[in-house]
Image 1 (cartoon, helix red, strand yellow):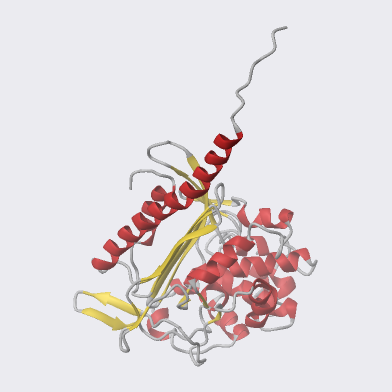
Image 2 (cartoon, rainbow, N blue to C red):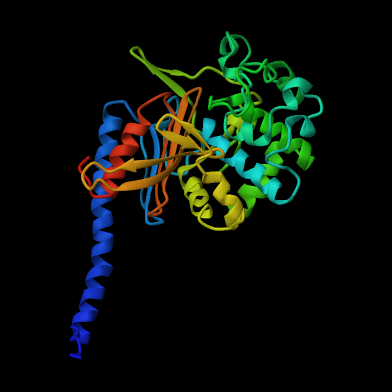
Length: 370
């Protein structure tokens, strides 16, 4: 049989190719960073983005920058380490705590709500499971949808048990597990379950089980009365200009939306999710499993899960993401897990088109027209 010939490259040529790759990779990253910067500057110039952004490619940060002001009254600029309220991005941290307690044998995903909160109304509590709460399929009405809630209740402080009884215990809107309906009450209740099982406040459990082990020193529970260095103020934008966002007592968003963090700390969080530092690989799969359909995507535990089709290559890429919105802030984290890309956008001037911005950044990362 004839022996197949193979190409043998001279050692000098191999060395040259290695050097070429080593130097060209940062150049390509710089080119993408320049495109991202130009894109975000355009949004900033048009008053559509005021905050901080971080983009990682293949697990390496290629871009981070602040735009506009963290405090307009003192003319203090936003930076990558500015602290922003996360809103509903908080839910991914709550779901992580729940699964850690499941792994420790202290909670069952099929356990009934009444098993963990004896004070909860029995007729509902014996039907709703932890899984239902995690996937927004419990049927419990969301307190943020209650009539006049924001105008009449949102400034008042509440204890956890008091708030659960008064605002998270309405009659079921549908049978548990029947469908997806985004629900802040469910994640507030999960915070109460965490406190009951762990025997410590939700805030302390977060610090002990997530923030401290990962070295997320610029993340925490946003208490209005606390002095928190480098915390951004929240603003709302209208045709007349900017105004300070309405006051919200942070005992109300609680485990559904009361955390703050930075773009840099969220990169630490993203990288930890590729490891088993916080949770075993088997349990971590449950976080990102598409448990229940929602539109053209699905919901895992505290995360949205979907496929993005790139317009030019037609390639489908897996995206794990969550957005957040709270008085004066809106936020977005998108993890392109097939390639370890990350997009973090944190804005402190109310609602804006972060998803539109992230779509363009995604296309830059994948060398697509944007």
